[in-house]
Structures are given as C-alpha cells and as structure tokens.
Amino acid sequence: MKKIFRFLTKVILFLFIWSIVSVILYRFVPVYFTPLMGIRVVEQVADGERPKVKHKWVSSGNISDNMRRAVLASEDQRFFDHNGFDRVEIEKALKENKTRKRPRGASTISQQTAKNVFLWPRSSWFRKGAEAYFTVLIELFWSKERILTVYLNSMETGNGIYGVEAVAREHFNTTAAKLSASQSALVAATLPNPLRFSSKSPSSYMMQRQSYILRQMRNVQLPPVSKKK
Picture 1 (cartoon, rainbow, N blue to C red):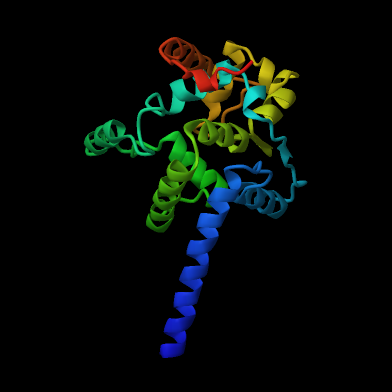
Picture 2: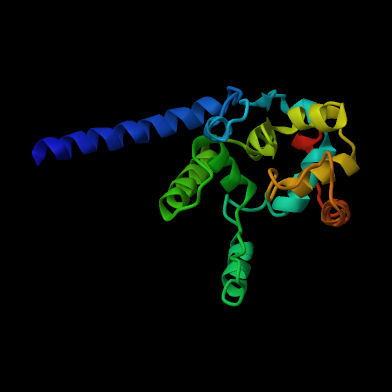
C-alpha cells in the first residue's frame, strides 16, 4: 500500500508540475496542436475517412477586430470583466435549467480555451473540475489578450478545421486579418456545434444567428490592447 501511495503521489505531483509548466509555456509559444485535433483524427480514421487537420497559427495582430467582437458577442460578452467564470451567466443557467429539457451552459471563453488546449470535448464531472483548474491557471498566468488569441487559434470551426485563419482560407478565401463583420459573425454562429453548422453553407437558422450576432457586436468594446492593425 505504501508503494502504491508513493506512486500515486509522484503521479499527482508530476501532473501538477506539468500543468503549471504547460500553461506558462503557452503564454509565449504558439499552440500548434491540441488534444481535440488528435481526437478528431482518431474519429475520422474510425469512420473510414481520410484524416484532416487544417490549422495555421496567427498572431494577435493578424486577427481582425471583427472576429474578436463576433466571438465576444456570441460567446462571452463579459470576458474582460470576469476572472474566468461568469457568475451572472452561471446563475441564469441554474435558474433556467430547472425547467429546460436541455441544460443551458454558461462556459466562458476562458473555460473553452482551457478545454480546447489542455483537455477533451466529452463532458463529465472530472473534466469539468479539470477545466475549472486550468481556467484558474490561464487567468493567473496569461493576459486576457493572450487567452482570446489562443481561443481564436484553437477553436473548432468545421470538419477538420481549427482556428480563425484556417476557416478564413477554407470558407471565405481570405485571411483572418481581412475577415469582414458579416463573415466573422457567420463563423461565430457555428461555434455551438461547428460539425453540424457550416459558415460555408449556412442554413436559414445560421443566417438568423448571424443577424443576432451582428447586432450584439455593436455593444462590444475592445480594450486598446486588442486594437491592432
């Protein structure tokens, strides 16, 4: 029992040190590959499909403010005000979920970034706990600008497509820096389920979501640090 206890202690210590080092490293180093990309490749192979990973990291200065506003308007309008967890949305979700058949989530961009970069998509209480842990770490070691940049580079934006640069090229024949407000809102509209919704061939529901996001984008103010040409 003592050997097992010592072994488990070493494993936990290793994972703790690894998590801290990884978060600090990604504060400065681009995230070129995520667990989600690997999981999707395995799923594609299992389904008899050819593995597809379209991804290109771009710096903060090469992402349009339109795209920033679109994801903030769609996913997390209080992003620059909270510490990784939006208490207002959490309270709303708790109240609404008492009567809703399908639970409403309240994940922030910080939480989604933690999940995308360090964890896996399948939901469970263990993953939720790990997600909260990594959310605290990235809020502690990264700036808000860094979190948003990593999120925009790691989010799933289509079948085998990850990040804003890849979807800009694949679906709009342009770059992340040149995405228009309309295009950005369309990409943001797919984020709840980018494998079901496509910004390349939008449905009528997607067009409605795009219109809503475009209206909400008018209320989003970016801090000076985010306004890069």
